[in-house]
Amino acid sequence: MGLLLSIFSLVWGILAIIGMAVGIIPCFGSLNYLNIPFAVLGLLFSILAIVLSSKKELAFAGCILCAVAILIGGIRLVLGFGVF
Image 1 (tube, rainbow, N blue to C red):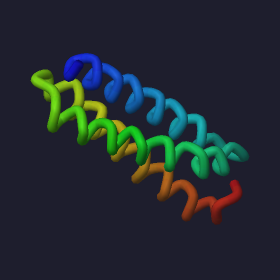
Image 2 (image 1 turned 60 degrees about the vertical axis):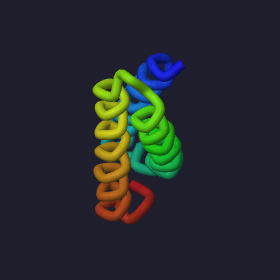
Image 3 (image 1 turned 180 degrees about the vertical axis):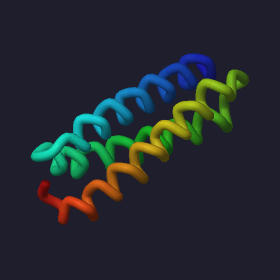
Image 4 (image 1 turned 90 degrees about the horizontal axis):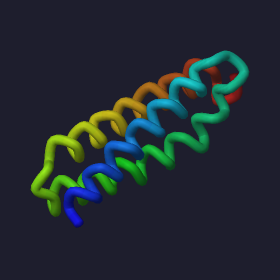
């Protein structure tokens, strides 16, 4: 079960990065209002996977991807005044 959770957290991190990349495009900045909570849930699942899994590398990669999506998405919201 730990390996499955690690793979799940990595896939979740990849989806969060894709959502963040789309949110960087002008006029799609408000997508980050949906992507940031999605990435926070992914971060929580990744931390859980790090604790429970024997394959910690995949879960750690998912954790990093979700954290980057949260950070860049938040910066994008601030720079675009939350709309653009």
